[in-house]
Length: 126
Length: 149
Image 1: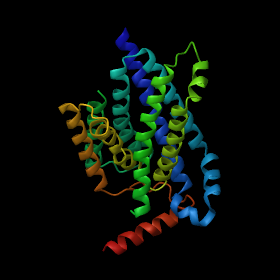
Image 2: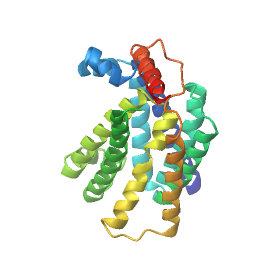
Image 3: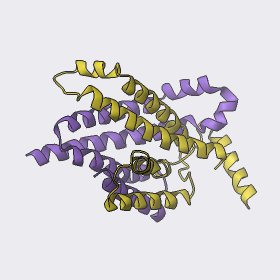
Image 4: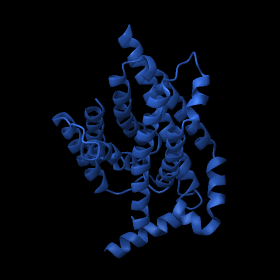
């Protein structure tokens, strides 16, 4: 039963973080290259565009859900499992989701990179 | 990739690592947060370490969104995971903590992943080129590849 709670917490945290990352990445692609915009419209106009982007606001909401579910999960779950497992699975989940929703070309090089980082994070935090 | 863009990636890495460690230090000082004591969330924010941690994480978020405006998510995330390595190295050489062989293996794996993804292109998605600013970014990219040829 305890395992079930721990793994559902990991799943919720991972799903929320991946959703947040994808939405914010999509929002920033819609806003456009910040370095190119900086000279043209200035920093305040950029901040205005980012904050008024619906994808950005949804993404921040999803990230907050992920952050607070991690905080609560850490206070009753298996700490040595929840944080590293969620961080590690988020890298894998993002590679899948970026390919599907952001149309990024996740080639073999990027897959191996995501796997290596996920494994490394699991080892470091474990 | 310009020097400024590498600086942004370095900012994502350093601010995330520093913010996380300062925040967790503050959390250990102020005690845990539970569902039954939501007031403890507000008490926690008054702890100076937590306040500094929140500012650092805001700086992380600014550089993270900046990076995502010109690079793929599957590029930014692995490239900035060096922060985990940074934390382990600080633990070993500044705090003189023991780093187990398994953790060194973790450091090696992450560094390998970072090297792999950094050797490839930063941007591969071409879905949002109608977005404002995308044309300028495209011009910069073609200029960069032109000068490299």
